[in-house]
Image 1: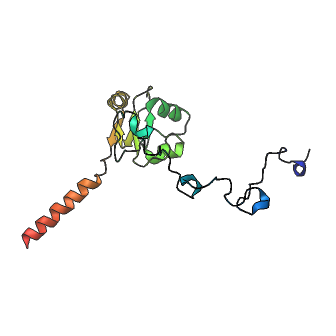
Image 2 (image 1 turned 90 degrees about the horizontal axis):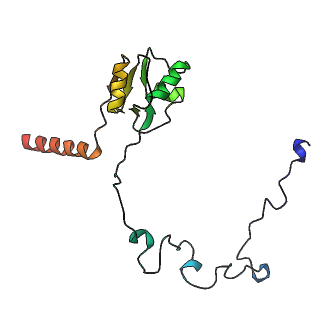
Image 3 (image 1 turned 180 degrees about the vertical axis):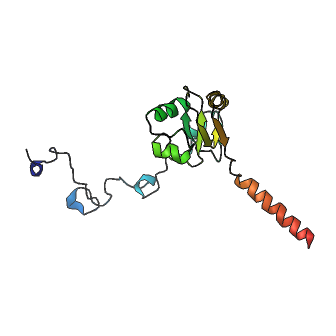
Length: 175
């Protein structure tokens, strides 16, 4: 067998039916959509619409809480960090931050940085600069002789707007 002999299996590639191309094609006029109604029109079939009846997704009870602006952290356990230090992929003598963890392949891209979790055991003395850390992780790093610097969280948008409003009000009052 050679590269130029390779073919798809029979029937693997099926030509798309060209609808609305005249009576002789067998899919002319209504193009297989029947007659009239919302589903005969283009772009009108609404997902979850049940013809005036209360849709299922609105009938079932909702549970829990969904934040409007959820934070996206890369969660990294201390045990994994120790494995990467032992393998020589992370340098424990320097500061371990989001960039270092990303380059080593421990943390994938996340919008709001890294959150350090305490699962596993840390034996190396290491200093971390992360967006957040659990209580167990802080204790484990301190026990190993390291340090954790928690970066100040970015100010939420509504707090920024409130600060601008207050600054504008103060500027108007000063005039």
